[in-house]
Length: 185
Image (cartoon, rainbow, N blue to C red; front, side, top):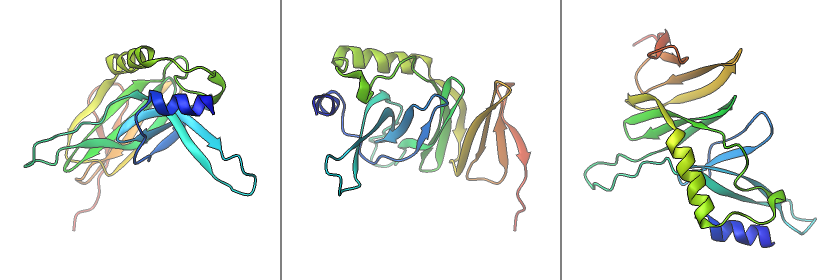
């Protein structure tokens, strides 16, 4: 209970938890409030209840919030994949999107086994370190409709579809390439 309470005090609420993935070593990552979190599930104490509480720590505050009332230009994680040493986040907004790559932290900021969690200063340092190494792979998209990332022979492959026709591939060799065209009516 001490760990769960510390996690709640240390982090903001993971509202609107959504996209999730596991890294190759079994670490669990998810989106909450549009940002990137790492954590897990704490089962309820009652054996007759099959419930668990999602707990974790925000590792990268990457959501974009636009407060201009004339422009609903927020972007939140709309797809999440772990591949190799990175987390790939497809960001979605109203008529906009982008793809980010965030390095997987060397060690978990939150884990049930960790016992004492880092204090606010260590937590802010971990988020700063994540943001400093976050890369913008694909910018200025009209939107993001589909997204998946993987590694093939140690090389990244990010497949995506924007609001317009076509399937695209980013493979770290330059600009994204259109790999399939869709028929137009």
